[in-house]
Image (cartoon, rainbow, N blue to C red; front, side, top):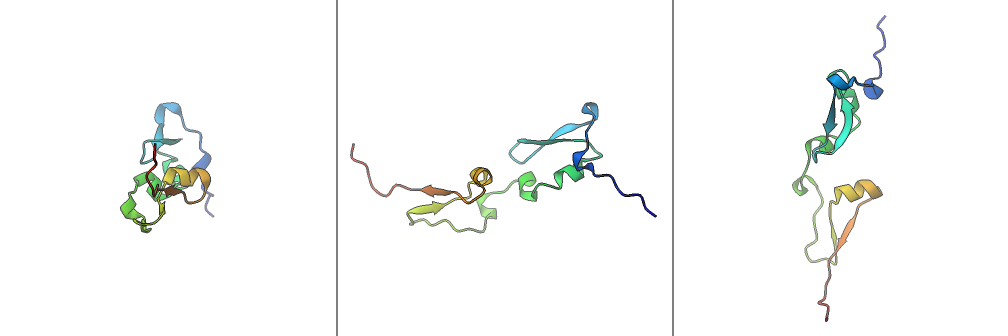
Length: 94
């Protein structure tokens, strides 16, 4: 009979043997050590850790449309839905 593996996703790391793991934007995610790194990072999508560009997104951008759809990754995460960018279509007389 095998012993159940401990849940390392909530592991409390020793400060002397651990470090802050960061995302592709260099934003700290969580403190990890060699024992729990894999378990703690498993909750993040791969593109958060490795980074991505517009080329990785399968969504065309409308060049002539009034509303341009953009990736807006940070805003998408904050609002939990796709964000939009509006382009002005006429010159303002000042």
